[in-house]
Length: 218
Ligand code: GAR
Image (cartoon, rainbow, N blue to C red; front, side, top):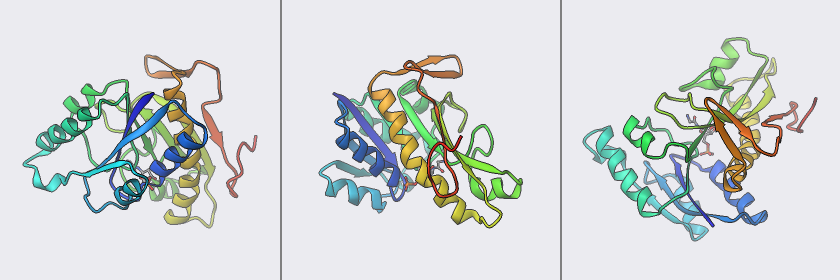
């Protein structure tokens, strides 16, 4: 049984998607705790309602980034996780923290990396004239949003899109993409080869959606 700790800062809709897939598909895994740097994050309330341990660790009460990361890793290590899942966790992590969970910490980012790391990804994709956008699940390394890519989801950018409509279309695919990637980790189906991640069963490591959200249009 693999132990999963999920880190969030807000709604936690990706957390919910992973939890539902884990239960519905009977993974040999369990989300043992949800941690947030925002004690009032909605996702913490949701987790408590599911009977999952949920802990708010306010980053503002810590002197600096290193002090917060030390408190966070103490809380994570208490859970002895096999996998740490960043799901809308909006804090930059120190290299020491990242090194501690190397190869067992993944993140979802709302762009097709390596394009648009950082913030405001949807507006930046629209401004750049991109015809597709999407989301990326990757292993976390010290360089922000740059680790080995596990899987990506691609959606069209419409002429009528603004950042919120594009964000909604991408988020709907995140809810398919992230459970898929976590499932692969849980079942030991990922092989790291330098910067490349292979699915050992040769599953397609991308999702393609049309404007209506239907999958696999090619
Ligand atoms: C998601 O869109 C996720 O990709 C993004 O935050 C949102 C969280 O939504 N993450 C980042 O921007 C990380 N740099 P959720 O709380 O409903 O899962």
